Amino acid sequence: MCAKKGKENWEELLVGMVGASVNWFPRWKEGGAGVLCSYEGFPNVPLMGTMSCINYNPILAIRQLGYPMRGAPSEEGIAPFIARGFSEGNAKMLQRVRKTWNTVERKDKELRGISNDVSGGYHKWLKARTQGITWLPKLKISSGEEVEVPEENEEVQALKVELERMRVVKEKFKMKATRVRKECDELRDVNMAMAETLERESKRT
Image (cartoon, rainbow, N blue to C red; front, side, top):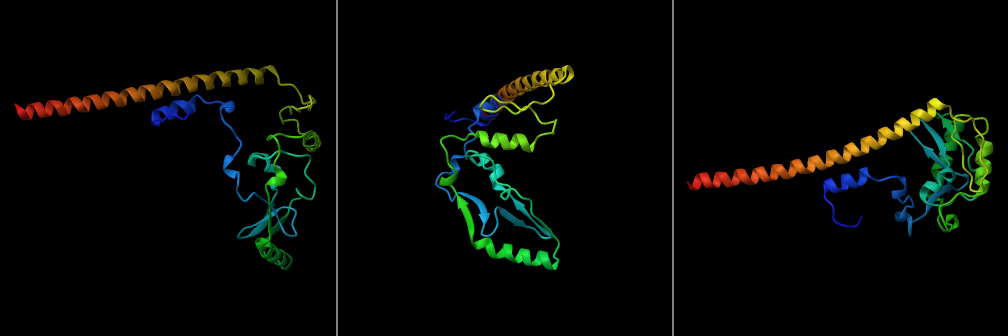
């Protein structure tokens, strides 16, 4: 992985990679300023645009930033906030948001854990939150508990098998195409060298 690679080598390597080949822990965050979690007076991060203001709930994406999900998020921390237009009430709210830009709260050590994992409390909250949504896939819980959803029918299973087969065929085709492109480039270099040699010989003659 650390050896020097050309363009073709990288293409072949990336085509053959699977999900397990990628380490999703963001090493670039170590020693940084941490995650922007909230503004003073707000449980989350309000974002202002040209016509409105909405809030961003970083606690829902904390695992994507390399931190473990520790229990269920508070209802206050994920409460939606939308201010449309510039009415008198919204204008005061926007001014309040603007004043809090210099008093942001960042967290790093408080969010770290032994591993980038999900705790059972979060699973229970997620199960209750998604109850009744039948199109969600089955959620596997570390304790062995599972959220029951209707089983897939034979047609869906057959489509998944076919998609997996086509994915394998596509990856093999990409690898062959990469090798053929590399061989073509090598032949082109050989032909150019031979042409230059013939030209020099012709001039000498």
